[in-house]
Image 1 (tube, rainbow, N blue to C red):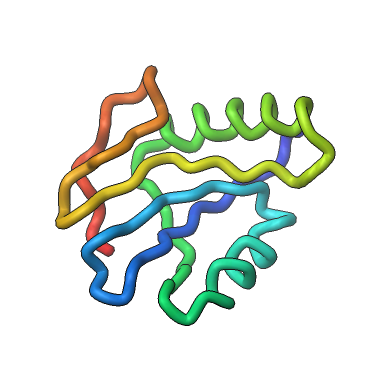
Image 2: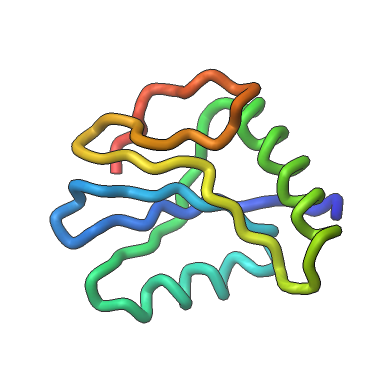
Amino acid sequence: MNESIRFACITSPDQRHACFFAAPAANFGRLLDAWNRDEELTAVPFEFADPQIASEVQAWLSDAATKDDRPPLVLVGSAESGQWVNWNLADVPRPPVPSY
């Protein structure tokens, strides 16, 4: 898989909790549609400023695509009350928590 990727930020109604997902650009609309079906959540496109994040996620998605027939989707990280609680890119330092 060597295609562009897109990120989404999924937030709780009070915006206290946010999850940052990535998917291939070709499947991105499906990601947003799936999360936005839940009336309690909001899913919007999002971009990380650090190109190293995109590069690492691209490699992760490529690896995930070889292991399953379903379109890959990965959880990059999650934040609660403006603090990271999960960051899944071990080789990339956590950036400041983005505004969401």
